Image 1 (cartoon, rainbow, N blue to C red):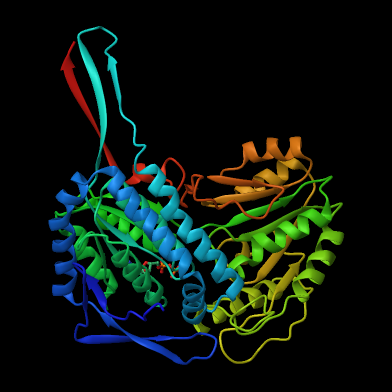
Image 2: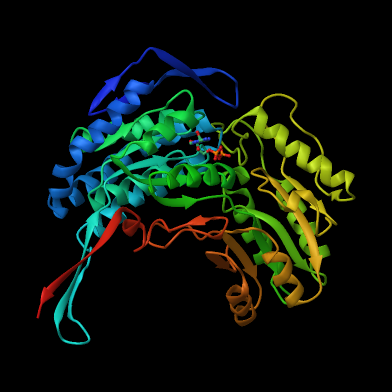
Length: 474
Ligand code: ADP
């Protein structure tokens, strides 16, 4: 049985602290648990613990680190059901999504257990022959990890696993909406025999000042953040003062482009996955649907039918395909965006019937959205698909790129055309004729204001490694 962990995890100890924060189930509004809020002294203790553990962990044989991560993968897989239930309880997503998240999250432990032993350097002769150029990689040091609520397990393991594989120690600051999953992962790592101080989890009450204080501490050398572009900008400024290294996974505003000649059935199935995975609460979620004029009517009708057929309800109920949003505040934000686009002339093609209580919002398709509508300028983070039509490939590319974001794009259509368009899109990731790209073995990350750096794949571990060049006489 997995135990419910509610205290801060500092230097291998559970610390109750003096203040607590209620965590609610967003589907029912019921209290799940009170978790510890870490005060200044506890955040300092987490930094000290991570710093004190850093040298031994960096010196630990890569194979030893790999085997601990492998054990974490196995423990996570063993408790997948319980972990999925916990995610559903505090986040609101349906169990199927929560199970998929746990499998994805565990995979980061397996992938980086394999990467831990494969960090390469090189040894070569300088062009003028005067010396050998030796290049090695060293752990960057104590890393602060800040994660959002939409994937409370996967965003944590996508950072913890490469950090530990690289030989870094960490302090994880989870989102206040979903701290229980992060604490469960800390417990799992404790059971996997991660040494005390290597992983610490704290949830400060006053996040901004507490994070700034940790970033100003000269022992903290690296920040890996996943969240909004708005908070990312604040953190980039904060990191400038002490030149803390940063990895930033920020917002997205993914275009979903259906080209002339696309198979509408394939496009709609991909759209359902790209839009509705996690109830639309993903930075990779398709946010803007650009459909060739010849297909827009049939695509809109088919997507409307599919969206309307989805069963909405509490995430833990069998057969439910769409749970609620993480909070009523999020629901209100989505409702406001939809109303604003209807006021601007868009047409809702799905039923307007809305659950009046809780954080539920119905699957919604908006047709005839204007290319400059407000809903196309920001992350919706909910089950809403706004559709815009276009006439030419150039127009589609221009519309798709007309955003400060550049995380992911989806292209549907005949393969050779789709590949050409993929090459023209300003996005760190492009899905061609499919609705999902995420894979721990592939580089995840964005261009433009969607972020800096990459997670997963062969790049992920390098976010936690410094390069050192040693010159040796030839
Ligand atoms: P989201 O919209 O997904 O909630 P946020 O960017 O608001 O994204 O939050 C992502 C993470 O950043 C959360 O853990 C949140 O607590 C944290 N956070 C929010 N504001 C700040 C801040 N000023 N400094 C540091 N972390 C912050």
